Image (cartoon, rainbow, N blue to C red):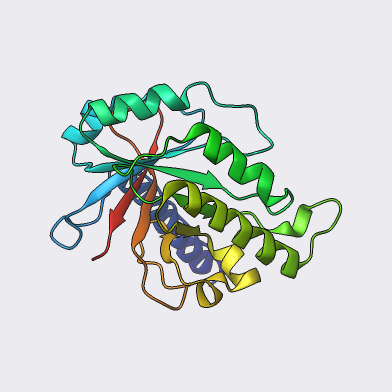
Length: 227
C-alpha cells in the first residue's frame, strides 16, 4: 500500500511541476483576447532596458505608460528620451507616478511637475498605489497615508489638467479601501485572471507583468483597457 501511495504522490508532484512549467512558458507570451479587449498597450518601468517602441506598436500596443522614478530615487535621465521616442513611434503616452506612503506628498508631486510637460495630448496620469506604510520609519497612520495621497492626487491633476487613474494593488486596497473612498478610474493588477479585488469596475488591467517580446530584452508589463 505504501508503495502505491508513494507512486501516486510522485505522479501528482510531476503533474504539478509540469503544469507550473507550462503556465510559466505560456505566460511569457500570453495576452488577453483582442476581441474582448481591442485596446491594448504596455507599461515601462523606470530604469528599464531600452525599448523599441516601433516594435511595441507593431505587436499590438496602441499606448504606453512610462513610470517615473520614485521621489526617494535618483532622477531617471532616460525618462525624457523614452517619452519622445514613444511619441515618435505613434503611441499614445501616459505617465505613472509611484506613490510612497513614507514620503510627504509635496516631494512626490513635485517630481511629476518637474519631469512631465503640460500637454493635452498625454493620456491621463496614473498614480501607482502598490506599497503600504507597514515598513515606514517613523510609523505613518492610515489616516495620514490617505491624506497625503489626496494631496498628491490633487497636485498632479492640477498640473496635468486631467483626473488621475489609480493603479491600485491588492495589498494597498486591502489596507486602505481606496477604491471605495476615492472616485477615480482604477487600474488593477493581476496576471492572467480578471481582477475583482476593488469591488467596482476598472478601466485598466495589467494582465501580464512579464510579457516577453521583440520590443525589449526584458519582460514588459502588458495592459488592456475595459470600455
